Image (cartoon, rainbow, N blue to C red; front, side):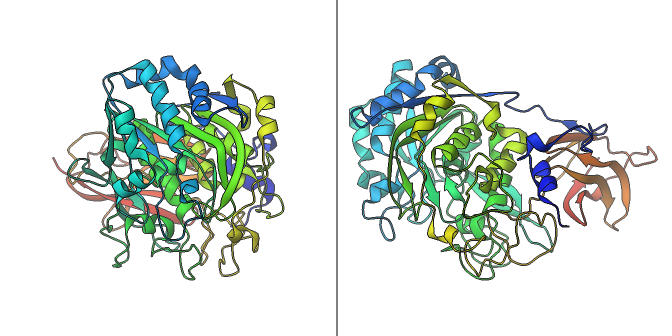
Length: 507
């Protein structure tokens, strides 16, 4: 299905100004849209500094407007500070600390937290993508001194499942011919409401996602370094699976399905409803341009952004990095746009935040105060080849939506819906809530199918705007009769394809 630019931007939510009366978007009558965490506006704070100031004080200042909010949020909880540690060693830039969250940014964050509570427990940890020894990375980065500088601070390995049990999250493999569930084990702190999760990182260019900020810091930090149970019968660790389904190393392997954008969107649907991250801090004192996220070079900006909406914080990160505020489609290497970060658009469209400049309100600072700090970041060398990263990345331009194809660019893999899987082995309830999200507006159908492939109950079929939806099923068929115990399938249809979730009903 080929869409023109106007229609594509309309359906992805990137072209709000293009949507006018008569667009064909109608209010659903069968499906209830879930209330979003962020409604009309998302608050942020911005602070600009200079080389004569300090990064530590800058972080304290940008967090000042959030003191009451954080005080209420951390009561009775353990705080997890999630820095972006990446890895330490082979392949990083000459100064490996440039790839990591700077320790002085963390010091400023701890100073702020300790001004609220002297006793709330604080843990600092990560699960790096390559080197599994996070304690060595934290020590090499100097983080071990924080445990003596402050009280109640612990460095932890979030990959230690004895201390932090794994939670199995179900996402859909992004195959362009079939869609099956895969298990992604994530650290339980990201789904446990007893933890107050803070994402703190610097802005960096990225070889697969164009930009990495506070959202990717959480969504790629959560998966454990283990082998998923179902990845086309191949041994692929979880983080590699998130990048390329059949494995990933450079982002340029021929034959990969470059699905990171879609997988980040899916994982956000699993993690973000629990409230993580509760606070997002962008340390833009010094960013990384070029061959990020590990081998780029320094960009000095001397500013910071903070907020409880990670999408809003990353939207301002995109602006600070020089991405155009104009929605561009197809992607144009001559004019990098905030819409290049497809995963952020889709997560926002699903109701988890506002990746929309017009929906951002400044509690401290202003857009006019931020503008002088904008720098035009040099993007990753992958980005400067052709419209997709490299000639062997054969994905078409983003207007090809929901159509079969071969390999796709990870920035523009067609945005399929996310059907929240019923993970219980047996369902006894007389009413089952079916949840799904749409990253773009689309016509969908939702029904219950028996094991012979016959639809026994049509729950709805209509054109829906992007967002999160819920519809109950009362275990009755189209004739009103109660469905007997047995195996059935929840089938979400979109275009010519569908996501099918098997369920077992018992009396």
